[in-house]
Length: 217
Image (spheres, rainbow, N blue to C red):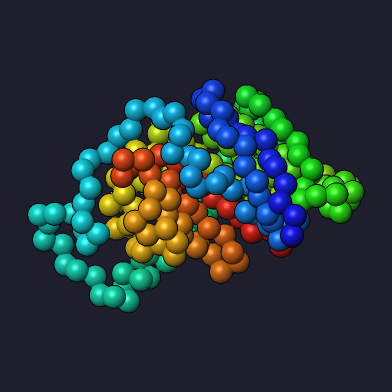
C-alpha cells in the first residue's frame, strides 16, 4: 500500500503542514480526512458557548432520566442527523458553488497513485475561508461524490445546539462515547453503517473543527 503526499490545506490564511495518506481503495474517504494532530493549529474566530455540562444533562434541572434504550435511540437519531449535516451545502461542485459562491481556492489532485490516476478520475478540493470540501470526481461522466467536509466557522450551526466553540461536554452528552479518541483532542463517531464518520477536534475543551469523512462505494 503506497502512501502519497497531499498538498497542505489552508484555513483563514494559515497553512497546515503537508501530510501523507495511505488509502486502501480509490474510493476511500479517509484520503481526504485531515490528520488529527494538525487541526489544533487552526486559527479560530471568537467561540461561543457556556460552561461544560455533565454528560447526564444540565446541572440543576429536574428532567427525568431517559432509559438506556431511549438514550441509545436518541443518540442514534442524533448521529444520523449529524451524518446528513455534512452535505447541507451540497454534494457536487456545482451545488456547493451555488450555496456558497466561488471558493477562495480550488485544487485538483490525482487519486491514489498512478494506477487510478490513469483512469482519469480526480480529487477536487474546494477551499473557503473556514470550510473545505473534498470531492471524488468520476470521469468520463464528470460525476462528483462528496468524500470529506471540514468546518471551522463558528457562525455555522453544525446541528441545532452544536457549533464550533461548543464545549466538549455538550458533544459527549448528545452523542455518547466516541468509537475512537475518547479523552483526546480528536474524538470520532461512526455515523452510518456504510462507513461514514464525523470527528470533532477540540482545543481547550471546545470544538475547534468538525470533519466529515464519507465512504464512497
